[in-house]
Length: 360
Image (cartoon, rainbow, N blue to C red):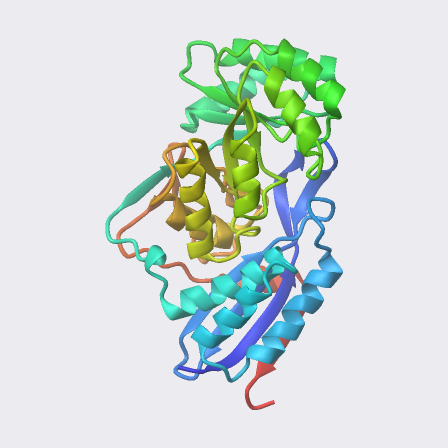
């Protein structure tokens, strides 16, 4: 089995509702999609969504990384290609995840084999910032079956605390819990003031209070927070998991395929979190159907809480021919489930594309 053709695509898929976090508001997602075809016509695809400001990766650098490696691996055996890309994946993990995912699908990774119907619970974000409209949104989310909700904070300490209290009142008695996420936008003083003031009722965790590299600030917040802290943006390798486990007040670590860019690597990281006595959480809320599906396949072997791989629900159009199945708050993968790309949607939202061929 040799790699015969590769297509690298940048699409821009609009969102149903703008997705607001503390640093920016998303109106669309910008995935890089890689499709790899072997000489027998078998195809695999993967995705990497680089969000400027989330990490050290840039859109321009990620595209050039993908271009260079798509060109290098043409004509190679997929196993050898996977080995070589994985070896340099720390340089551009999100960009690497698009290529590695395509190769793993092409090679038939066992984690993608759905041997029986599988249901995996998801969370969904509370978008509403108008306090008076929050109860109605909570009711809508509850009717859709969500039992865990994501609440973005990190805007203003006092306003965030007020909004969290309103949400707590709205979920009272509904069997719903919330996860708070500052997306590293508090400094140490703000994070400590916010975390220490929380009423922990129905709050599962407080995610990434401070900057990715500011371990000292995150540790200070974790020590005084009334709810466990979850580390996310700071985590890129096993050593970061170990460092988190040594911090008082940290109870959770979240991983994403775009940072642990091969499925076995991701599974090993999630297992490491649990081995260290912490609770692993999985999922990227800014990916399309592709990585949401792959993360769901890993989650069924590693996770026992609501996944955060809900980006596909935010899109106006799925990139799969049929949207990743969703019912009553759960991703539902039927036995034998294997998706196909909707090239019509991708072409309709195309930014740019390049093709690579063994014959060229």
